[in-house]
Length: 106
Image 1 (cartoon, rainbow, N blue to C red):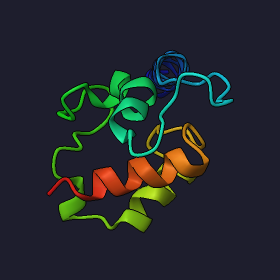
Image 2: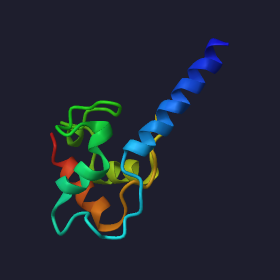
Image 3: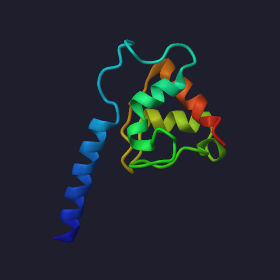
C-alpha cells in the first residue's frame, strides 16, 4: 500500500514538474538568439534546476561540467533520465548552446 501511494505521489510530482519545466512548442519565437544559452536555460530549465543552478526539484548544475562532458550533458537533455528529467525539452541549436554552456560550469 505504501509503495502504491509513493508511486502515485511521485507520478503526480513528475506531471507537475513537466508542466513547470518549460514544455510548450519551440518554434523560435522568444527563445535564444546566437550564444544566449542562459536565456534558454532560464526559460526551459530553471524551474527545476534553479535560476542560480543550485538545484531544486532537479539536481544542482553549478559544477556539472566537472563531472560530465558537453556530449554527456547534451545526451541527458535530449534523452532525459529515469530519475524524472523529461526528454526533449531543448532541441537543435539551443540544445548545443545549453550543453556547451553547462559543460563550462566546473
